[in-house]
Structures are given as structure tokens and as C-alpha cells.
Image (cartoon, rainbow, N blue to C red; front, side, top):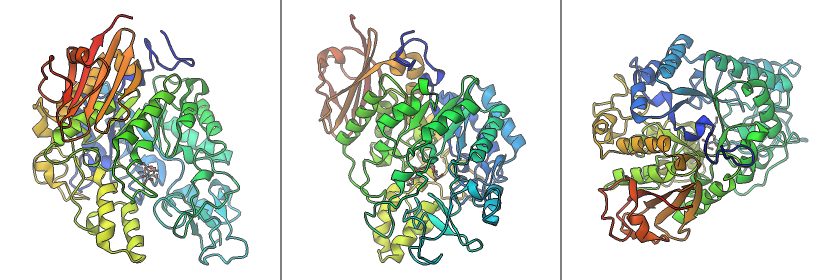
Length: 577
Ligand code: TEU
């Protein structure tokens, strides 16, 4: 085996997850077995053959733990039980066995930056200033010289991710607690070793039960700068606390400890750290195998390119920005470290609507986007419905939205005097609810998702866009994703090949090569609805090479490299060394 400096895969033997594809299930919206309108574990189990048909290797299950569902399960009140809306622990065990029977692995969501305010730990912590668990969370008195509850008396000026301040006053004890997310998601104090020990014990409990790893929610936020300084105020009443809790002073120490206490000595696990705001340099540290922290990260740079100061400040997407960003990440993790590749998840709008064309060219745009992503170096994640080319939803008004982030933002903006008609376009473009409409299994009234009333409306285009219609159709998005996954499994150059970005200044054509030994792949994607010439070096030789994947009928090998609207091609050739 040849390997990078610290054992990162360059070729030959590689960690199993380098050639794997992960499929994310958002259980609330995947499949409902009991007709209550909310997806559940038995529903997931009933649809596992879809994943086998697609060919993925790993399932990542978004949270199914006991939760008041303030943030759709990312607010956990019992880490070691299943929420009744999703099923039971016995049902979970049955699902896990069914997953393993099919040769798949299952990774759980791990949400330990915060708990629910209904978690017993927090109930104890808030009960009195002297409670032994008081220090398990971030409690602080009002700003010096101010009365608790007065405007601006919060201990810092930080805003929460879901509008409003990041501190809530507890009337009983007169202190404030920190919550980077909703007021029902108090942040755990990782400075306290008892907290860390409790988290590690809980993680071991799930691994002992048979799960294959964790997707770690906002795990780069667990270490706060303990002095909690105020943040810079750009606009509005609140400051930006992120510099004091993103990749904070002890985050690497904590993750190394977690690795030692939980992961070390167990084989074939997958750990992925979700890390908003992580830089390439930080990601290299987090994923350097020699440091033993996590296997890979989710970074956010590419999903912020079409946003200004906030996610509601929607800007036009520019392909050159995407190339610069992905190019930098590919180069930065080329020798050490590993990245996840994703367009979509339960927090992002649907990629075909966001970067592609969800109208006449939907199938071609969805397959082009999938191709470009999956051919990068890293581990691809497919979010449920992405493999069908599911689109954003036609939300008519605020009553159609469910997500706390969208609902809060709307309320605050309208209270501040914005007209609803001015607030809604950004919500339609960016709301997380776009990703959370039910999985479209078939063309029946609720898309085969539920026999009851779905908790959020099914996208009316399920009559056309659905799994049943695509299953036997070789021209479908589903069939294309199947081929992309097969290619990763079969072609070592996809997994380990060096990456070279081509045409960094071309505003329509995304082009790069991957090279491993004598095998070279050329990947082309047309990010436009017009024909576009791909002026890559050596074009005539490439057009005569093997076309291993495309989303149009094969072009004439003698023709110049001109891409049709939203066309994707992957060529393969072998060259002399
Ligand atoms: O998300 C973290 C995160 O920063 C986001 O993607 C978040 O959704 C975004 O800032 C909102 O604009 C994770 C989960 O994926 C998300 O669903 C949770 O709401 C959040 O953490 C809190 O647990």
C-alpha cells in the first residue's frame, strides 16, 4: 500500500469508508408505518430494500431519541431511549438487525453540544444554584450592573441560531443559561469532566448495541472560550458569538479524549464531525488519522456561497466560487485528512432547485450535480430523495412551514416591520423544510409516505417525481445514482485518485481529472441550460476515451467536446506512466 504521510488513502488498502457511500434518512419524513402522519422506525425498516437497490453502504439515521421535538429531534431528553413517535428500543434493535442483514452499516446522530431543556440533567441543573449538576450547563448571572430580565442584561450579546438571544433567564434561580440554538436546547458544559464521562458512556452503550458509528452534530462547538466575551455586532441587536465557540480552545483535546474513551479498539466504525465554520486547515487537524479525532468532517463553505450576511440574504450562485471552494478543499486534504461530499441534508434546500433546474431539465440537472459531486475525493452522502431528483416545495404562506428556524425568523422579521411578501421568498429558497417534505415513494395521494395526514405537506410533484416511477427506468435520476455508486465501488481512481481542477475560470463548465497510477478520469459538468464547449487540455484524445458515465445518449467520439444543457460526462483512459 502506498499512503499519504499519515496513512491517509492514496492507493491500495484504504479505510473502508473511503469507498463507501452514506445515505441519510430523516426518519420523520421517510416512511410512516402506523398512519400518524410521522415517519417511524418500522417505516424505515419496510423501505430498506430501496437502499439495497441503490447500492449504498451506510445509513445515517437522523435523531430518533426521546425528544420534545422543538428542533425536530435535535433536542434530546433521553439519549438512551427511542421517542414513542418513532417506536421503541426493541423496534430499533429490529431495524439495526435488518440493516446488518442486508450488509449495510448504521450510523447514529450524536447531539451532545446541547440537550433538551427537558433532559433530566438540565432539570437537575436548573433546580438550584447549588445542585451538583449546576455546572453541567453554562449558567451566568445578568450582565454586571443590570437586573435579570432587563433588555440587554444577557451575560453576552450573542444571538442564537434560531433568532433572538443565545441566553434565557431562569426566573427561579435568577441566572441565565446559554443556548446557541433554541431556548429548549441548552448547551452542555464540556469543561466539566463529568459531562464528558456521561457522554462517552452513552456512546459506548450504543456501540455495544451494535451501531457502527456517529454523525456528530455541531461537534466543533463543544469547546467554548470560558470567559465568554461579547461578539461583534454587524447589524441588529445581537453580536456574533461564533468566534468563541466554533473550534474553541479545547475542541481537539475533547475529540481525542472521546476517541480514546469510545472509539479506540473498535473496528470498522465511522465518525463524521458536522462542523459549521470549519476551515480547511482545521479540518486537516480534525481528520489526520495520526491525531485520532474523527474520520471525516462536514464542512459548510459550499452551502454558504449563495448567502450574504445571513442565510436569508440569498445571493446568486456563482460557479466560479464553487470551483474555488471545492478546489481548495480537495487540495488542502490531498495528503492528510478526509472530507465528506454532500449537496443535501435535512438542513439544506434541495440541490436541483438550488444549483440546477427543477423545471424542464430536472433529470439532467440532478444527474449532472450528482456526477460532479460523487467524482470528487471524499465520502459522498446521499440525502433521502436526492436520488430521485426531489425539488424544493411550493410553500404558499407561513402556515405551510414547520421548522423552528423558519417560523422564528418569519415572526421576528414581520414584528420588525418587514412585509410578509418580502420575507417569504428567502424562506422558500432556503428553508430547511424544503428537505423535510415526505419522501416520494409513488404517485398515490400521500406519495406512499403515510396512510394518514402527513405532518408537512407532500410536494405535489410526487405524481411525477417518485421512486416507483424511476425504479425500472434506466434514464432516471435513481438509475444514475446507482451507476455513480457502482463506479465508486469499482474504480479505485474515484476513491484514491489525485484531483486536478481544470478550467477554474469557466463560468459554465465544471471540469477536473482524477488520476491513480496509469488510470485517469475526466469529469465534466455543464452548469447551464445552454450548450457549452469544454476547452480542456487534450480534448480530442478525451472525446475518444471510454465514456463510463453520462446523462445523455453517448456522443460521437469524433465530435468536439461540447456539452449539452446540464450534461455530465465521465471519461476514462489509461496512460503511460
Ligand atoms: O445543524 C447545525 C447548523 O449549524 C446548521 O446547519 C443549522 O441548521 C443552520 O445553522 C441553520 O441555518 C445541526 C443539525 O443538522 C440541525 O438540524 C440542528 O438544528 C442543529 O445542529 C442543532 O442541533
